[in-house]
Length: 585
Image (tube, rainbow, N blue to C red; front, top):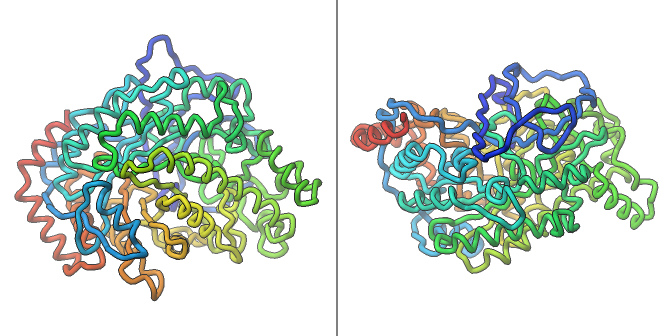
C-alpha cells in the first residue's frame, strides 16, 4: 500500500465484520497476543507531513494489516443520476514480445480481440463475505455489479480470506459466500481477479473490517511468538507469518508454504468450472496487505507514521537463524547475531540515522551490502517458493498468476531509499531493486502488479523527497527489461479527473523510446463503495473506463468522451434507478 499527503487528510471509519459464531467474544487484554482486537484508526491525522520526533519502542502491540479502503455500506438513491452503458470490447495488442499481455486481455479461455487498451477492474469491499460465510449486502452488491457492467468495467477483484475460509480447523474449507459471489459475477458477465489473502485485515487507514488469521494459526503463534515478524525492540507483527518459517512444519505438522498451497488447491478444485472464463487471475498474497514485502511500516497504535523510514523485520528466531548461517557462509560470523542497530526507528528520516544517511551510511558499506542482499533475497526466495506452488496448481486452468508489489515512494529521492530497504526492496541510487523482482516473476509467467499509479510527484511532500512518478517509471522499465506484464492499482481512493488522467498516462507505459504500443495489461480501481456511485464521481469514472479501454489508439479527446458519458448517463437512468433502490436498502 502506497501512502501520500492525501493519506494524512482525515480518517475512514472502520466497521468490524460481525462475528456470528456462537460462543466467541472479543476482549482486550494487557498481554500482547495474535488475537488482539482491531480498533478504528485515530481521526487525529495531520494534513501536512512534518519530520516527527523519534518514536519510542514502548507500547508493545501487534500491528495489523494495512488494507485498502472503506466498505460498501449502502449507496444513496442519487446513484440514479450517475450511471451509463458503454458497450466496449476487451482488447488485445498482438506482439511476439507481449504475448502475456495479449493473453491476459483476451480473458483466459474465451478471449476477444481488438486494437489495444487497458481493461479496468474494480475492487470489491473487504468484507464482501461475512463471518457466516454469506454475501454481505447482497442486493447492494448485485445492483452495483450491474452498474459496473453497464459502464464497461471488465470485472472485479475480491479478497478470498484465509481467515474466513479455513477459520476453524486446518484443512476444513468453507467457500459458501465466495461461491455465491462468483456466481453473481458470472451472471453479470464480469471477470474476476481472486486474491489469495493469506494476511490479516484490520488496523490501518482504509481498513473497514477485522479478519484475523485462522484460529488454529493464531493458536500456534501464541504458543511460538517467533512465528510472527519481529523488530529489533521485540515488537511482534501479526499481519502475516514470518517468511523465516516458510519451510518448517510449525502449523500442526504443515509448513506455511504447504498451507498456502493446500488452500489454493482447494480453491482450484471448488471453482474449476469458473477458472479461465469467469476467474481470469489469481493474485497470490505474499505479505502484509497481500504485497510481497516485509511489514516495515505498521500503522497500528501509531507505530509508524507517513513518511517514516520504517524498521527492519528480521528479529524472530527463524530469521536470525538464517542470518547467522548467511554470515558464517560469508566468512563474517560477527555479522550474524543481529540486524543493523544504527538504522533508527520507525518514524526517523534517513539523515537521522548512521545506517541510512547520505554520506558514509552503513547501507553503502561492505556490511550493508551483505545484510541488504540477504534481507532482500529472503523475500525473493519467499516469492519463488509460493509462485512455484501456485504455478503448478493453476497450470492449464486458463488463469493468470499475479503478485502485488508496494509503491513505496517516500524518500525515493534519497541515495539510500531507506523506506524501500526496510520493506525488503534493495533499491538504492546505485542499484535497481525492482529488476530482480520482475525477473523472478518472469520465471513463473506471473504478472507484476504495482500500486501508486494515480500519484504525481508534486502532490506529495517534497521535504520527504517523494517521487511516485519516477518510481512507477523505474518499475515499468524493469518489467519491460524482464519481459513481464505490468498491471496497476491506485493506492488510495481517488475520484477526480486529475488522478484519472495520471492513471491513463501511466498505463500507456511511455517510459522510453522503445515503448511502442506497450500498455499495462490491466488496471484495478480502488474500490466499490458509496463514493464511487455519487453522481459526479460516477460520471467521471464512466469516462475514465472508456478512455482506458481505448488506450493508445484513442481517437477522441477527454472532453468528447465526457460528453458521451453524459449522454449515456441520461439514457440509462432507468437501469441506474433500479440499482439505486437496491443499494439504498
